[in-house]
Structures are given as C-alpha cells and as structure tokens.
Image (cartoon, rainbow, N blue to C red; front, top):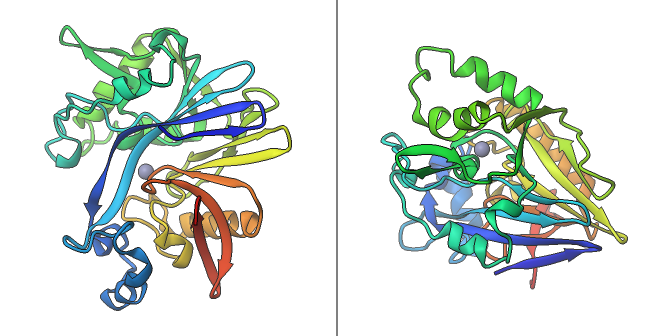
Amino acid sequence: MQTWQIGNVRIDRVVEFEMPLIPPLALYPAATPEAIERHKHWLEPRLMDPESGLLVLGIHSYLIRSRNHTILVDACSGNDRPRPNKLRYHMKQWPYLENLAKTGVALEDVDYVLCTHLHVDHVGWNTRLVDGRWVPTFPNARYLFARAEWEYWREHYKTEQFRDDPYYKDSILPIIEAGQFELVESDYAFDDEVRLDPSPGHTPGHVCVHIRSGGQEAVMSGDLMHHALQCAEPDWSSCFCVDPAHSARTRREFLGRYEGTPVRILTAHFPTPTAGTIVRAGGAWRFRFEGE
Ligand SMILES: [Zn+2]
C-alpha cells in the first residue's frame, strides 16, 4: 500500500484496479496519431501499454486521517454494478474493501466521504449491495457533495436520456434516502488542515482536495487530468469533460500554480506511483512521478 505523511496528516491510497484501459485517441478528442507517436518514448511501457496501445489508468481512493477526521476521497466504480454501457465497470468483484481494511480503518470509522465529482468511477463505493439492497458502505459517514456538482447532476438525471441510468440509483440515491447526504460549498474546509478547492470544467462542481500541515502541502487533483499526457498537452480535455474549454483553462491554471513547487500532487487516475510534482518542460509541463 502507498502511504504519504503530510505533516500530521496520513494519506493511504486504496486501489480498486489499475490496468491498460482506454485508447488515447478515444480519451482525448483533440489528440492525433502523430502527437501520440511523438510522446510514445516516455509513455511506454508504464503509462501506455505497448501491446494494446491503451493508456494505463488507476482507479483508487485516498483515505485521509487528520487530527480530527477520517475522510475517504473518491469512491471508485464499486462491485456488483450493472453497467451494460460501460463494461469496464460492469458486475465487477474487486477486492476493494479488503484493500481498505489493510489501512486499519473500519467502515464504521469513516467520518466523511467526499467525491471530487459525481462521475461513475468516483461514486461506486458510496454504497454496497447487502441482501439485495444498496446501502451506504460507511454507516457513520456524512457524504459531502459540492452544491454546484449536485445541482448539475440532479437536473441531468431528470432528463429522459439519463433517467434510467443505474449509477444514480445504486450509488447516489441510497445516500440521499439514508439521510447521510450533505451539500457544501466548493471551498469547504473540514478543518485547518484539509479543505476543498473549486476546479470546475471537467464537471461544473468538480473540487480538488487540499492538505496543508506541518509546512507541507498536497493536492488531490481529481479528474482535472486523467493522465500525465495532459501535463505535456494541457489543452487536451477528455471526452468525459462537461465543458472541455473550461476544463483546459482550469488545468493550465493548476499546472502553472504548482510548477516548480514541492507540493505533492495526488492524482485520481495516474498509475503507480500515482503521486508526483509538476515541472515546467518544453513550453508546457511534465509530471515528475515520485522516485524519478
Ligand atoms: Zn470524471
């Protein structure tokens, strides 16, 4: 398991899975075969699988333990989910809860669950299937949703096209029905060590999680970027971005803010070692993975 200590705050990475997952030209509509060819030398084999040509992505949560709180950030895709239109998440049986148990934290110990945004691969373990019913996985947790994020998806799921999407029904609705749901502003502070940073674009209420303690700093960047390619190509927004132009602006602003600093970036989808720092390179940026 990967663990980071930021001052008084301990952070563990809880992995659901990590594998070659998506073709770069599908994930990034603005990418071209020539551009991928140009980047290949630093992508293969760890960040892009040479055999399949797929980008390697990780799906994981971060468990934060500050002096005051135990907070789970992002909830992956979950088990037992019918996802006929997204087979990479369909009816899976990942050992996620076993991996979580290795942190020494029990489900009852989690005080807060915070999804950086409400996409299908960030909300799954909000719930689990018990005796045929979807129940909150963390019985004592408050589940915080950024207000702007919730208001967007609430309207989205009223539309005919998405009304029957199972992920709203199995991963979000049961939290609301259990009364464990709470709306917060996008700059909400858990305490003086852990707070949210608004980072809209990928989705309207997307938030990063900022940790500052004992003179050290880390940021969980969520889907502000899915892959290290976007440091080199910051204008490549993903096919999942609700507002691609806004997403690119937010990404450029983020990369510029942290370039050349020791602030540890804890990414939502970069494969192991997952964390690193931002450095300026060739008119754009490079993600320097830990240990490089
Ligand atoms: Zn997303």
